[in-house]
Image (cartoon, rainbow, N blue to C red; front, side, top):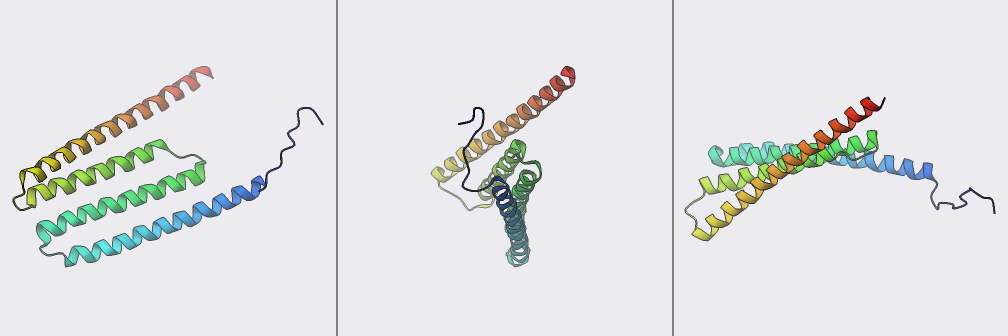
Amino acid sequence: MAKGKDTKKSVIPSLMADRMEEVFHIVLGVFLFGIALAALGFSLVRVFTTAPFFPDGMIQAINDILFIIIILEILRTVIARYTDGVFQLQNFLIIGIIAAVRHILTVGASMTLGAEKPRESFDRAVIELGISSAIVVALVFAIFLSRATDGALSAKALKDN
């Protein structure tokens, strides 16, 4: 047995696995784009058929727009993974922020526009708003830390050169 040589063989050749992954990312990206287009079409129909438009239709439209933005951010993350070869943490954090803000807007609108609700429902909604707000703050702080770390690593790399 030769020293220093790795004699392990993979069941699937590396090049073939890379190509399969590329095809999968392309199919996934096209599928996500199709979902975003379908959601946009559905949202456009719903905006014009929701009665009354103010405030119910407007709130639903904002909710739908934020949902479509979430889908597009996921698509951007898949594309970045395909082109760069790594998942980008900041994209996932932004998706989380958009989702939490979407929830805050939905709960806030239902509290404001809803009929008189029992005290228990109101308390639960306030707790949901508090938790969602804390999630937004935590995710924004995580983005800040991520960017600060990236900046510090870039500065260190420049200093070392």
